[in-house]
Length: 483
Ligand code: GLN
Image (cartoon, rainbow, N blue to C red):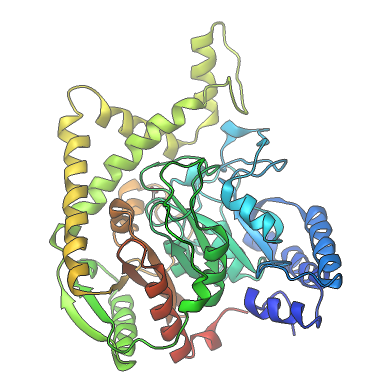
């Protein structure tokens, strides 16, 4: 058995039976990183010594008979926009050069408290702005299924690490699809929780009304375990929800009889790869076969979602990124006065896509254009939310594609911002409405993974995980998993 390939819950069982040690598990994953990292480039920063030390500590605690949480001894990779005390946090940007956070993000703090073993920080599009991980200031990450393809983005490093067995589980962040798109492209499970389910404290802000942290894992059970560990109210994030945290593993019953599943036709967009559409339809047919009541539906305002997202997200980004001025963090390029220093630092420190977002965002918020763009986009956002509210009166879950295509070649969309933005057409809606979305691998199309996306009302992670689990158990998707 290659310990780098197993899931967190399989590893947890073996650890508790004392059949393996956390040290062996961590070593197996570190060896896999050494083998494949030169092709995959999933990581920006690796912390192998610290990982070995944490694993040894967990082994000591198991040996002392302690009853440890489910993630104890499990090797985890963290997207490099999550603040990690003592470990540099780059957001894949030059502007944070040399920045080492003095504190952990709440999600990281909770993982550490649960005994997870931190392997390092994964690659992303700069400040999580992108859909391919090519906008990293370091290097692009390759898709483990075919290194000439993108892994999706912006959490491409986390998804690729899990798919390539370079981490047992990982955390990503999702502002407009950044967990779900790479999950689909890399053939792993990705969960974007309800807005507020997981504290954003210590997640470097991109679009504060959209951002959420969530897991990327090899199966649904692991997603449930990671979510249970990181979810819950945090006084340091006033938008975090004061809802009780469940043990999401309890919702994993392989039973969907009577669940009402809606299929909104707007998600089968024009120009979609017909084989991807067919794969999604087949997955939905399987869910019907399992006993769910499947019906077509319509969410007419979906058509405004992409345009609204690409106004709201840059608007929030332009204000969130104002703090990088050469004074407080990382890079400083000196000038003859303070204004020149600001300008030079931002000119050198930010990449082209981040600059584009700042310019678009500043424009749409400026006096004279605010009403025409930002206010219109916020109205569209309300309409999108109302569509969902109506749909969830009739349905428990909506089943849709994650993206119009499978993973595309490195370089294919990098010169064409609109083509890149169109990648997100099926994912931005749930961020606009604050809903949870779960992606589960459902098929291979021309040898590449496709993820089915399940959407639910706020707080319905348990239902999404249950239907995702039932789907996963029903098929032989695992047999086609990349190993
Ligand atoms: N691709 C989208 C964007 O570029 C979403 C990114 C994300 O979810 N962080 O904004």
